[in-house]
Amino acid sequence: MVKTNAFKALADPVRREILELLKHGPMRAGDISSRFDLTPATVSYHLKILKQADLIFEAHEKNFIYYQLNTSVLEELFLWIANLEGGTHAQNK
Image 1: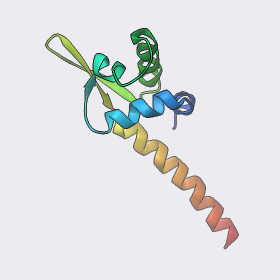
Image 2 (image 1 turned 135 degrees about the vertical axis):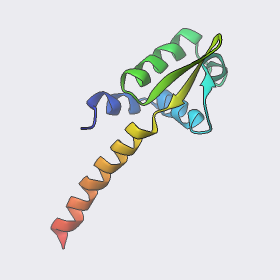
Image 3 (image 1 turned 90 degrees about the vertical axis):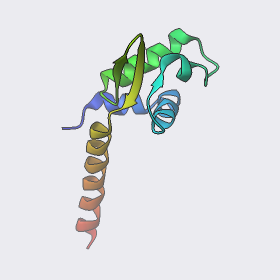
Image 4 (image 1 turned 90 degrees about the horizontal axis):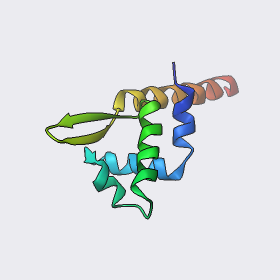
């Protein structure tokens, strides 16, 4: 079942941009933060929301925390949306 907080997380353009950055691979919070004209605390807040929605996860490597996309949750969202669209086409035929 699709988590409703995933849609709330995706509603914010900053969080969508963070996901865009992470599609190229894992990144540290500082590297993500440097891409925005926001305080590190604000970026941390956005990362927290994305983690709570299971759209990203943390990977600890030595003294660093890397953030990565959780592709399984994204795939679940895509499938759910595709099924909605499929239902519309099936009804119109």
